[in-house]
Amino acid sequence: MQERLQKILAHAGVASRRHAEEMIQAGRVSVNGHIITELGSKADPADVLAFARAANRDGSRSVASRVPWVWCNMHPSANA
Image (cartoon, rainbow, N blue to C red; front, side, top):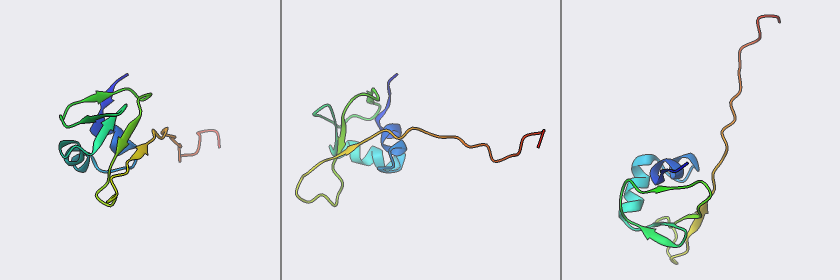
């Protein structure tokens, strides 16, 4: 299932969705080696998503990985 790049970057903890939009427009995000500059672009979770932060002055790119969500129920059961 494809998701918007902003959402993938936000879930990976790279940036907020708004900051991810700025990164995409600046050409600092690539999917499978192709630089993406258009908002609304989508990617599969299996795609390789790389990004360059402003701190990466040498032009190197970091790879974003998907982090699975784990939900915990904090309320005791009715039988407790």
